[in-house]
Length: 133
Image: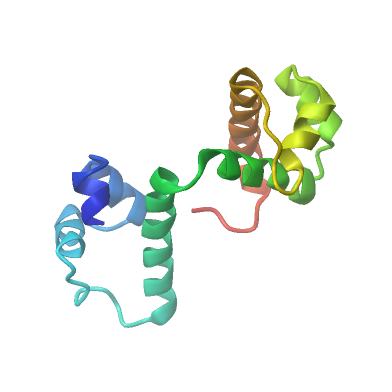
């Protein structure tokens, strides 16, 4: 939490909204104080999970993250590689390269087009996913 605030300069207000906690409790969390949190292990797990996901957004390999989101669209939402490729304005072989294990390199231009498409599709399809935030 401290790194999110200090190193990545995420605002207290943003964290407050994201975690659904008052700013004062965000301050406490950033100092390692978790005493105010309910003892419910599921609640704590969800809070710490959300913090971890936000932190990992900053430190994880961006290509792997894009590939993971692309896999969600193809496997969970059932979009074809062809549909994603057409929407992104790239060739199907580029989508296949990104989805291969390990992902094969594609140009930055193609990654950008795919990333923008993946972001917008995930945004619009998020309500179809089992859990939100």
